[in-house]
Amino acid sequence: MALIVEDGTGTLAAESYASVTDADTYLANRGLTLWAALSTAAKEQALRLATDYMLQVYRQRWNGTRVTNVQTLDWPRYLVPKKDSPGSYRALPSYYGYTIVPDEVKAAAAMLAYRSATGTDLAPDVQQPVTSESVGPITVTYAVGARQVVRFQAVDHILAPLLKDNGSGSRAALLRG
Image 1 (cartoon, helix red, strand yellow):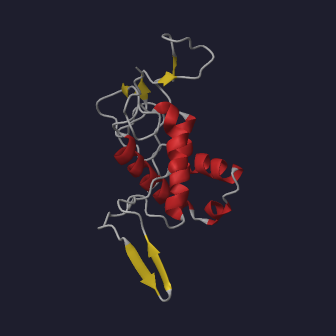
Image 2 (cartoon, rainbow, N blue to C red):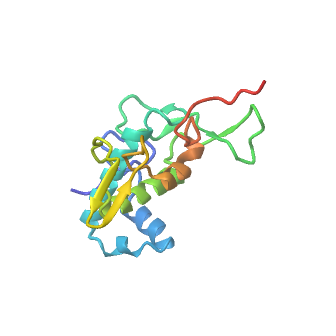
């Protein structure tokens, strides 16, 4: 079945933020050539998985609000400030258009699709932390409380301007006395 890409109208059946063509261009421009060898069907599947991941991880972190109550995906959105736009001035920010999916969202979907297509499980199950393991003569000891899940830092950085917490994953305010 052909991939249904969000076109900025709040499509009910949308499955992806980026088209195969969007991902092809973005990834080729970054020298990620393994993507080009994949079939169109494999690319579409990876883009669906990437978008699913973005819905799970970023849904509560996006700035603004959804344009409609029935849209399947989180974009398009109203009132998402362009924090570094030339037309912005302190309390009077410019905003992303409410009939688009920003290039940053498409880029993040492409990067996650690439990771998925090349064998990375985007949302692996979390298991009890291992503090030490041995393979033959090699022993590795992990820090107590070490992260047991994958965090896609490059994607967080791409999406940071669109997120409430600027992609840091933390919402604590810095107060100075």
